[in-house]
Structure formats: C-alpha cells, structure tokens
Length: 177
Image 1 (cartoon, rainbow, N blue to C red):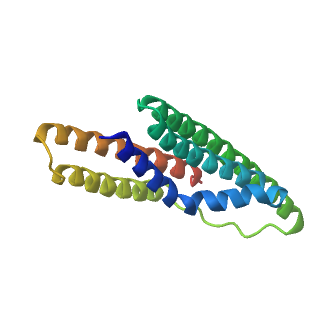
Image 2: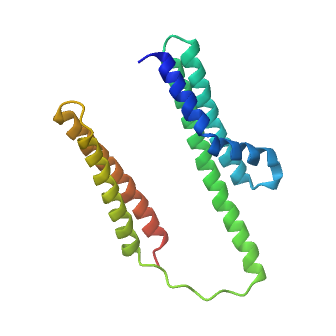
Image 3: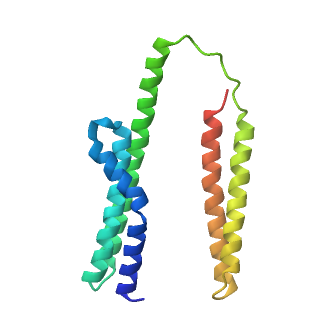
C-alpha cells in the first residue's frame, strides 16, 4: 500500500475525530473553570489526536512508515497514561465532593446493594455476545485460508472475553456488600 493512501486515510480519521478533540481543546482553553480531571482527560485526547495527525504528515514526508508508527504509538501511550491520571484525579475529586456534601446533609437512607453475582453475570453475558459477534465477523469476512481466520477469531474472542471478565470482576468488587 502506498504511503499516500495511508496518509489520506490517517487524515480522514483525524478529521473525523474533531468530535472529540475540538471539545477537548475548549476544555483546555477554559482553564480553571473545568475540574483538573477534565483538563487532564482533554490533554490526553488532544495528545493522541495530535500525534496521529503528525504521523499522517510523516507518512507524506518520510519514505519509511516506521517513524510515523512510532509517533502514533508514542501518542497512544501518552494519551493512555494521561487518561489513567485523569481517572485517578476524578475519583479524588468525587471523594472530596462527597465529603463536602456529607457535612451539609443528614445521612441518606442506605440503598440495598446490587448482588455482586448478578453484576458479574451481566458483564459476562455482554462479553460473550460481543466475543461471539466479533469471531463470527472474522470468520465470515473471508479472504484467505480458514486456519488463520480461525486463529484470529479464537484469539480475538479470548481477548474480548477476558477484558469483559476483568471489567465484571472489578464491577462486582465495587458492588460487594
């Protein structure tokens, strides 16, 4: 595939990503009017999209694709790290806010916690359906021998199922009485 085709594809993806990075730029410009976690999440979004745009430009300027891939990967890693930091800040902000509200209001009536097993079952069912649909789409896509498609379908199904299992376990842990 030509570098020009990859560069045009990257430009199209980057242009369509404006629904994410333009509001993120607005959050960054708002400064102290936004919570610290929102600004960090916006920085993560802008970092990722800016690195992707830079990678697209490198595909046009440099004959090798490796520098563009390295820039895109560096942007992805930086974006993920900033997003994790944003989540940690958000949880800290929520704890502070809960402490402030606790001082102002009497204690609310306790809610009955959702059973952890039911929450885990929901995540597992959604993960199983998603994994099966993904595996079926890989198998039905065609385009080559059956053995590599079976391996790709099985690998993706295992990865998706594992991801949903981990999400379900984390969710069940939070809903534990």
